[in-house]
Every structure is written in C-alpha cells, then in structure tokens.
Length: 113
Length: 116
Image (cartoon, rainbow over all chains, first blue to last red; front, side):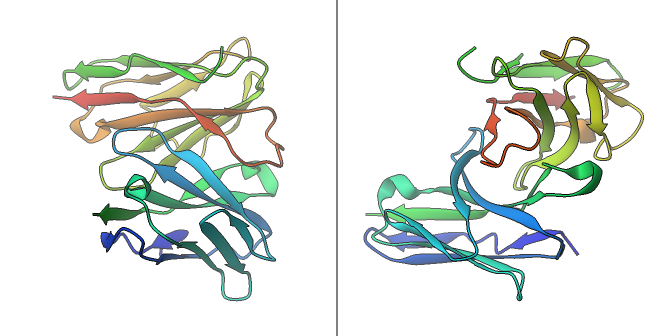
C-alpha cells in the first residue's frame, strides 16, 4: 500500500463548479500535511498547508481528519486557471526522516469553459 | 540566488553512460532534497542533506545513484551506468533548515533525464 493515496482522476469540471479531492495516508505518526499544485511540465509549488482545525485560502479549503488519516481539498467557483495536478503531501516529523515529503500520485483537474 | 537552480534542464544520454545533475539551492538554505518524478506519478524521495552530510539517503534506488554536497551549498546527483528506467524528471528542493515549520519547500524546475 502506498504511503499517500489519491484518486488520480482526471476530474473534468465546468467553470464555476465546486470540486473536491481526497487523500489518505498510512503513517499515523505525527506529521504535517500540505497540498501542492503542479502545472504541466513544471515543478510542484506549495498551494496550502493543512491544519487540524481546517483552513481556508480564498476559494480553497483544506481539511484534515487524523482519526481517519484523511485529507481533503475543496475548490469553489473553479477557474480555467485552476487546471493542474494537485498533489497531496505528507511530511515526516520524527527520526532520521525529519522533513521528508511524501507525495501522492496527484489528481488531475481540468476546468473547461 | 533567487530560486533553486537546476542544470541541465534536459539531458539525453545513452544507456550505460554516467551523468551528473546539479542543484544550486536558495542562498542560505541548509536543507536540500532530491526527488525523482516519473510520468504520471508524484515526486519520489531520493536523498536529503542537512549541510554537507546526507541525513537520509534511504530513497536512492541502488548503488548506481550517489549524491554529494561538499561545501553545504551546491549538490550533485550522480548516476552511473544509466538504464532506461532512470528516465524521469529529477527535482531538487531546498529549505532554510530541515526543521522549517513552514513546510513549503521551494523546488527547482528539474532536470529531465532521458536514457536512450
């Protein structure tokens, strides 16, 4: 089983739609969580951190459920420019792997007019 | 520099050859990470450095892969006897320290390695 699992999609949605991505992780040790965005043939860039209480950044909302080891990302009012691959990322916080990022496979989102 | 710089941006090499990939991190960043990304997959951890030393090299796939960071700044990933399966984008990232609580590591634009 992969450490971080995501539905690879693709998700094809019209502009203005709301779309949600889910992610599960297998390592229950204390960790940090992030969503990265990656455009085609570009490097991953941090979209937002994910906090236990949930957090929002404009049209983006991230949620974390530690008991279920589940992370989500909600995008409201989708824009054409949101088309990208969204990577669920877990960071190790202990031992020799401190700071190591483990990425999910990524979920492809295409927003169409 | 302003960002993480990786060279070359593209490298085509013949099977069996030796290649070196370079990463120049953001000035002052002590933590440096190497990842490998195959088509349709997320980046896969290879190795990370804290200063000059490799703090965790558990992701290196085999002994054909080696990385150095002799002066705690620029790092070189070395691949011996390249195989077609080594073809991927090799990404480098840096952060201020390996305990950076922000978690948002800055990635370079990567080196696309193609082994033919």
